[in-house]
Amino acid sequence: MRLLVTNIQRFSLHDGPGIRTTVFLKGCTLHCPWCCNPENIIPQKQFFFRKEKCIAKDGFCKYGDCPFAFGRKVGESLSRLTEQNLLQCRSGALGEYGKWYEAVELKKKLISDKRFWGDTGGVTFSGGEPLCQMDALEEVLVALKKDGVNLCAETALFVSTETVEKAVCLFDEFYVDVKLLDDKRVRKILGGDLALYLKNLDIICHSGRHVYLRHPQIKGYTDDLETERAIQKLLIKYPEFQYQVLEEHHLGDEKYKTLGFCCD
Ligand code: SF4
Image 1 (cartoon, rainbow, N blue to C red):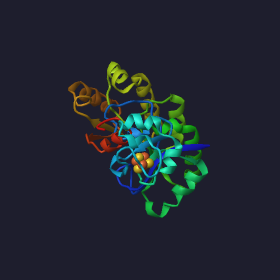
Image 2 (image 1 turned 90 degrees about the vertical axis):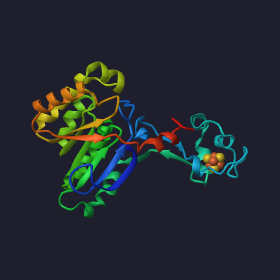
Image 3 (image 1 turned 90 degrees about the horizontal axis):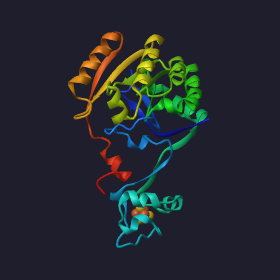
Image 4 (image 1 turned 60 degrees about the vertical axis):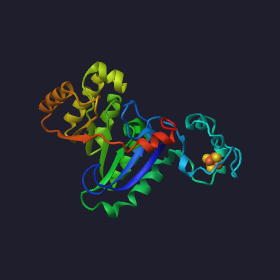
């Protein structure tokens, strides 16, 4: 089986214990407006464009016909782009988010980092929602586990309970987002089902796995008193969970531009 990966990040220090290799998988079940990894939302490959690298002038490009030579909006040009344009362009302006890896190939690539992990590090799977690719991921996790690798998941938990039941048998630790806890707002703002999230949280709790709840504090979305109170209740219910607040940042802004979502 194969997995669609957007990035393999080495020497990660904030995605679990020790020094880690973090794998970003493509595909997510939510649509959080503040997402800083927009390239990981849809489960298919996506073209991107880096304006600062494009050399076209006055409708002409020496690499051949290309929608970007005509100065249209990025989103519109991306929708006209073909594989052929990608192959022709040698300026570095065009590329693709997402690369398919066979499970065996990915495991081999990851285990080659083992010497950097020391006694406490390992591999973290992030996204998007890494559990969206659970079927193929299982093969990689089982293989890494055989080599004694510590495995973490960064997840929002808006996936089926069957998936979570499988995940708790394979991962050692979970970094779980707690974004909003009001049913209507979860549905409207995130596009998720709160009851499913809470059920999945219970499954992880009963598995005895180490859990870190992480709250992204986003102005106007998740920083209200009602959410704070609901999180407080959750922490009382699950005293064994560790808790962390994530500050708002704009590291994803450039990626939105490359996908034509803003500021053409
Ligand atoms: S081929 Fe590359 S450099 Fe030429 S117009 Fe297209 S994106 Fe720009």
